[in-house]
Image (cartoon, rainbow, N blue to C red):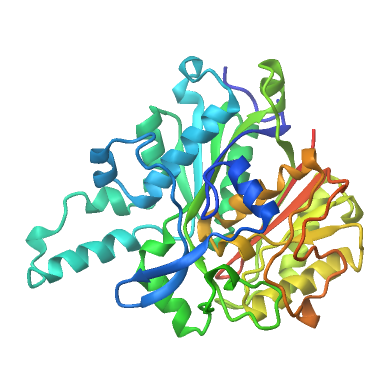
Length: 414
């Protein structure tokens, strides 16, 4: 049944599928966060050489054949794994779902760089003769590839597309899925973000040229948001996709519900290519709160975007001070300290890592903060060890990106 925009405005999360550098399911991921276990390791990539990265180790053949892996992309493989895991986790009878009423909305930072770099590396061995260029290149590099690979794998005939929203993309995918459900454009949404970023040397070279690529003799301590001695970003791959449904549909089938998407917002800095604007970030948080009908004091936990760059961390902390003041009851943490920056998947993964707080009443910490930057000293910041016996009913998830794109999602326990 096609519904009108006025019907069923409450949107809930009913399934989570993910792969992160330190876990290939939500229970594994959550366990690593509570145990302080990092997923960053040594990594080598052509032209750049030895560096550090967050690498996923999921079973690529769980939902794909080897031929499909060869034809597709790493981002597509991550997306297929996460989508299948999310659908399974949702408990929905997939064979009874109308495939034309399923929508797929996947946030990405960039797509196609990996495949083009690989092809250029191949033809270099043939004196750059383009006759050996792969005929798979075009479907691999189109922007909708990761979402499209999901539809091919699961037989989905409803709408699919990716959202290029830099490092705000994970939240953007989630927001788009909710909006399409509210508009009646689909009845079941697969939404979130994926990233294959570590497979392109260009992103490492680019951050290195900015002096923003993390270095540390101990990979597990390389990602250091809020730390005075932080020296840059750890690039990571990963993915997290959610199944979203209208609350009425989820309740009718007796689905477990992780939480309700009660508020969200996106805006733009319009001030710089890479430097964040704390005023616009605070405006984005304020807008999400207004849409949710909440006050800052209603937020129990803020999941920060902080990337371990000096300017980025300080600017976000300034935005949080403007909105939340020095409120100690609002806890604040960071997930990139464990896994690095998963780019298009970052926001979706970081939200997922905090959803279990509704049930276990534990706030996972920010690790690797040995000398707290005074400019990042927030009253509710949870460092080093988990905070237990917490009242956590509402989580606010920040995710910001280059060219000044900001996104905020608020999820509440049902």
